[in-house]
Amino acid sequence: MSGLKHDLGVDGTLADEVEEYLLWQARIAEAEQRARDFTDSMEWLTTAQRAEIERRYVSDDLQRAEGDLKRLAARCLSLQAEYQHRYHMLRRRCVGIALAVTAGCTYLTVLLWLL
Image (cartoon, rainbow, N blue to C red):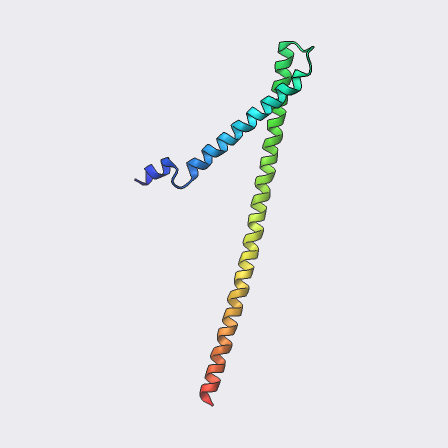
């Protein structure tokens, strides 16, 4: 049963992969359309030249997009590590304050009980 849930994407893994695939395919289609728009203004190109320029344009555009995604992913990981560190420091501080307040209250209770 758990294998079936995984295959159906209940945990989101399959859905994430499908979404990534569809987004990348949309990016490819967008790059191809921009390449066609770019070469449309160059009526003097032969069919082979037009195809080569479009291929290079798309290739360059997708390489840039991949580089952007890699930089974005690296930045996300960096921010995640930074926020995890801040969260742990804040949690330590809060636990320390809670322990100090509890110790202070306990001390006052014992002190008042002894009087």
